Length: 95
Image (cartoon, rainbow, N blue to C red; front, side, top):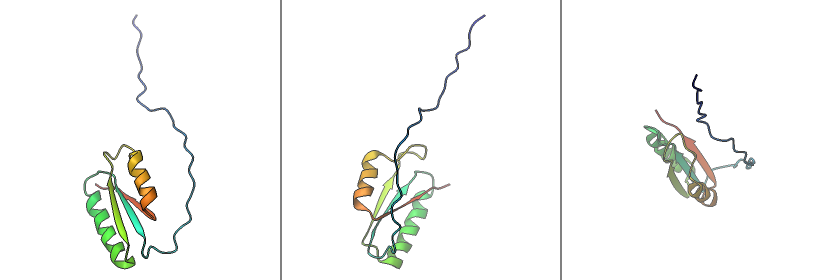
């Protein structure tokens, strides 16, 4: 009798530290980042939200990042860029 090989397709669990950041009292004059998860129409929705926030709060700047895939985390370099450059970040999904 032959044995059966069972493959586990999951990744090892990674534990990272995180903390909450104080909520901003306003977005007025701030730099806001937008993370597009790569799904269909997520860029369209995020651009509409960005334009509304830009007009409503007179944002200083907008930074867009597009993930390579919705199933992957944001690349480290992009996360670092958002952390350094932005006062707030909005993420979104599409479909």
